[in-house]
Length: 183
Length: 222
Image (cartoon, rainbow over all chains, first blue to last red):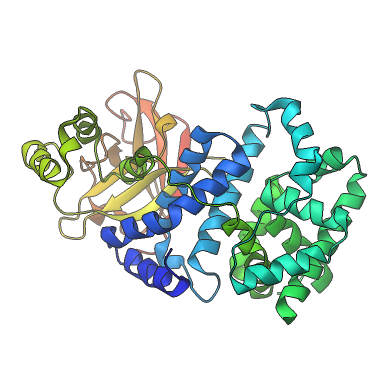
């Protein structure tokens, strides 16, 4: 996978209408974006459609990309997440999977183990900071960010009041930001 | 303008990045971001913090049809090319693909590549149509971004330039992405936006939109 500055250089060429650079950007970033969309939608057709939309939009808005604001993969991931959430507005989540899936997510296996993070330095730091959160806070972050669950979904999955989930998440992100930032 | 307290800013940014800010609130927040650097900075820090989790989801190359779909939606590949491609003619790799290009070249998109000008969205904010122009020829092109952007039988979509004041000017009925519209780029002079209306076959009979406006887009950078 190309590093952030290589991807930023590709984006600059894409903004000038360079289709070969666009294809290279797709090849370098689409696999992770597709995995992200798949995990969050649990539906291959929808995930494919979202990745398509994101790249169409990336081509059209390439000129507005600012590398100082976010690395390319972060910028593209945000587009995927926004579209996943948009879809959920139209079609409620977990429709295909039903309650069994929610129960599965609520199971210990889905909640406790954090995805094994890449060995990069910042990933190690995040892992370290995540491990300092309370179990409820950590589970809320993983369910929201990683699995794409709403406050209500998380409250149901953890059998916890909605207000508690909201405050867990807020405090968890506050902590993570400070913890990762100060290292 | 700083109408968000730091505390409120942090809380909203956290919900935005975690993905729990939804619906209208999320769209409002998205719209605030470009104009509020402090908010954007808060989001940027949180996104960078959590981004390694994305990398942990692994990677899976999407099927080849995803890239083909991107090209189709951008109007780079017409349906004829896709059909021929599926026919297996291009399966032999680059040489065959090149041959296909030569054989099918009259059917393919024009040689001069149009540049995207504006994206039109439906009432729900979903991008539906991209209007492009060719700087060399002054021709305009319109490509549908979604398959459901098709029209009910017997009706057509017509593109309009919206001047600052006065009546809309027709830019023509929307057909295939690689076919230029009847209207030329010069007719965009003084227009602040584009709109698409649903019209009877052949286009609006009296040169003014008669059906509902279904997509709109602002023209702010020409």
